Image (cartoon, rainbow, N blue to C red):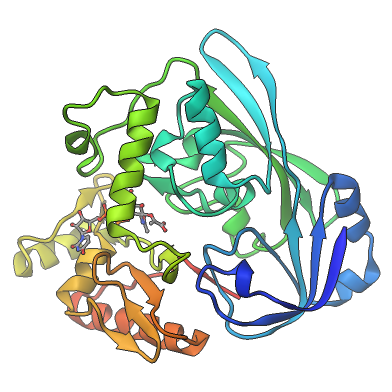
Length: 336
Ligand code: EPU
């Protein structure tokens, strides 16, 4: 276990905000984590567990303890004719794990290529892209509850997964469960999901296999999402809003060209990117923060942005979308 005092979080958040934490603690295994969870000082402070910081916005210096897992490793725990189960350390880099599986011909997460972050955070956020969600392949989540310092094994059902939602994000659980491992169920005979957006079209003329799907998803993402290494950002800043059918019918009359996806008979999902673009906000900026011009769902740190610049810009977007469409955008990014 490593403990640092007055630690810079610059490399721990993809917005590249230059903030500090009073303490930074990194544990390497479950024994270290158990030790931490028996520590009275730990519980007397404010604490927050981070992954790679790719979905976080630090509002300022953190006067408490930032915790990070360094639990690594990929282990096969079960195998049958159709599937295999891999138990993966929470600190494994998500995209390295995707590459590892694709290389071995194990299918299920190839559409989730190039998503920044770590395996543990992927299970909390229920990351998703191109018609696939982490929830589709998660069999179990192993986590310690800070409420009783006990280890718990969550089945997929226990995780209460929904669009960008999980048990671990619910207000009474948020920040109270430290994930050590995630067990994934992968397909030995890949089943391709190519019907989202222009994925199938981009694969035209190519042999369809796990590697070409991965390469194509990477190509599409690189073309429209800014690389956080170059331009600080946390991916989609807002989730795509769900609205009721009556609200949708009303909007449809005023905006017949509005893109939409039926979630069920009563609920419709509208792309937040479209709503933001319609408000004329592509490229809009406050201080050093700006709405990305290729993908307006992303807020970028264009030039030494402060957390305040980013929050003010997010609020301006929420205000204008609400005024024009009566739709409330919810941040996907966690404010700390
Ligand atoms: N659109 C516009 N203007 C634009 C861009 C998009 O009007 O400039 C509209 C188009 O109608 C387009 C629609 O928005 O069809 C949806 O865009 P896209 O498919 O690019 O995806 P998204 O809804 O913007 C979601 C995820 C992304 C994920 C992509 C691909 C959320 C909040 N975001 O974005 O996830 O990569 O789908 O599956 O659900 C992330 O969470 O950080 C993230 C990048």
